[in-house]
Length: 124
Image (cartoon, rainbow, N blue to C red; front, side, top):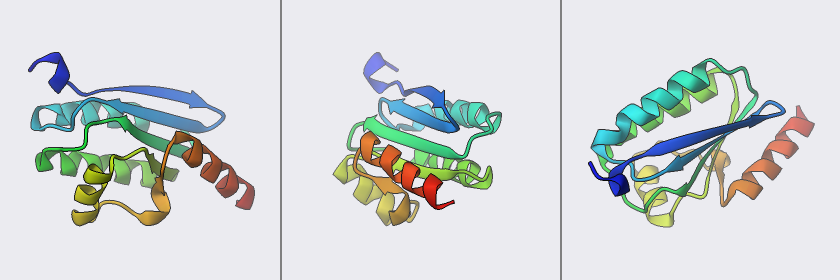
């Protein structure tokens, strides 16, 4: 697997908000990266999680969908408020077709996702 086919992630945490930034393609050989991310997230006690897809290409291997769905379930079960931001329109259509996106959890970009969490936090 060359560098352009590798998936990596970075986790930033501040004030009970975690931002997971995914970088690279969602390919069959990269599902283990999402599993490692889940392991890290499972040990954190946070109220809000944003999964940022800004640096994820527009296509994906459908075999990664179960790992992505498990990441979502883990976050929701913490319980934490989930936002998914900056999903390329083509990738978004694929994920919507698979039924793993919830409209209330989508944000156009990281800024919108953070703003929506502030609204949720004030409403709580």
